[in-house]
Image (cartoon, rainbow, N blue to C red; front, side, top):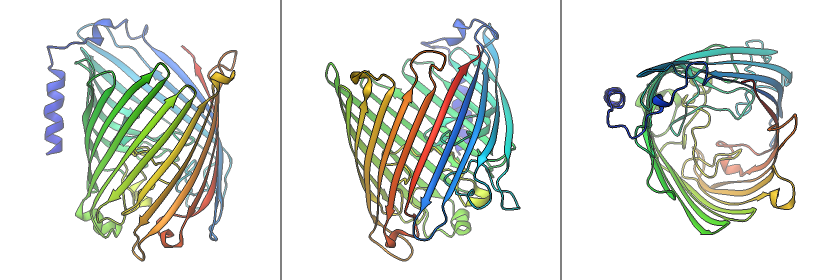
Length: 428
């Protein structure tokens, strides 16, 4: 049914004639609107696991090149997008690589990580008015299919995506993807995805209020729905209150329940975050709750072939309490207290600091109930404001995660450190 719905909505998008916007009419041409960017990334991650688990760490240097052409002029514009990725392993050989949550370089049959990896992709795109159809290799960023760019190299997907912005404030998306490229492996179909259909959109009702609704269907794995409501209430000139609600409902297919050994097929998870911003300070209070009969909790991301995961993107968790732990176990309830500081006011523009404390409780596993976990998250980030290194960013992040014995089947205690240096270069 979702295939038919996507087809019908896609035809409706492309045949829209009462457009309030017409991006194609503003096209300057294939070459004139083209851009070529290169991101140099040096990334290090270390996980010091507790309770007798071996430590894991990986370090690498990457170059991520992306080309985006403009659209040819005329009623229907045609363009091309392409990317090329290369990563060199600097550390994290046999014995230290292989942590599912790091995954810079996939381990081979020998048990050692690859010394380097490279891959590329391209897509052709067509635009009519303010509706674009893209076919080929892409990096979708939707609540139900969001590629992971939080490691050394990004994930990518192969398929078709239609995005329509014909009405001011309204964005509609419909797509079908049939291959997933794992971030740590070469090849266009290294993730094990059969297919995923996505459908949904977002609408800004006012300057302060916006909402979104999405659905996806991962073949032979699960069906998922997502809802979001975000309201930003201005209090004073430099003060505001933002309320952000996010929720997912997931239903596992019967065949996947049997294959994965899950004890149930249903999960519902939601979070509500309230953030008060005043000058350079921000204060966040958030609550997140998972319910349902599936012992997998909220399932997302990963690679089906070798991880027993679902393949819908490593960032497909638009929830408040997602740091090192996602606080997404069966029956888990978690609270967050967060604080952010922008040092611009103190004469250091580009420097920010964030800290959060999250505590989860009521965790259910196959052997126990009432488990707990807690995490302290810290992050400093500095972005160079001018000069030859303008826009270069340095991000230092650490997490201290402690998991009770009752929750050991779900998660593991440890200390994590991440160091990311990103240098974006606009070639043209």
